[in-house]
Picture: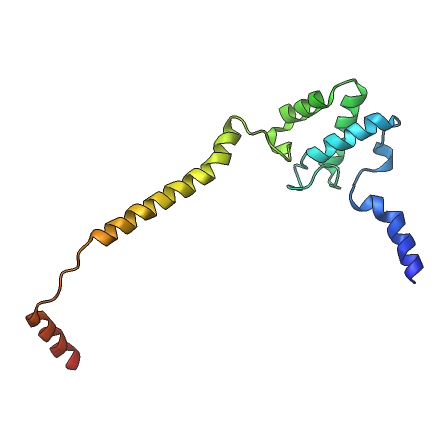
Length: 149
């Protein structure tokens, strides 16, 4: 039983982390390695946080084939990624660039946190500065009379 389980795991180990089908593989091992590296950096537009290398979705397969076609055509890795980004937007990058609008998005969280902390600090100082007027003897007597009823 243990032996058959080990053989099963060893046979299917490669398929666990990749959805690349055998008919997608390139004959040139260097180009295939480049395609796999690029595929692991691109997000599947249907599966959200899964790379196209891991996804079984049809769009991921189409993107894997597109990457391989561009590499066979002679494009560099950067040209292939830029082509896919130009076609599908920066959303396809698993690690987006930290420039332009992405920089604003990355910095807005800490900025809002600091702004909130500053507002809480000002609010706490305002509460400390408020003086609470003490009740007069007559007001205290009135409250006691109301509570005893």
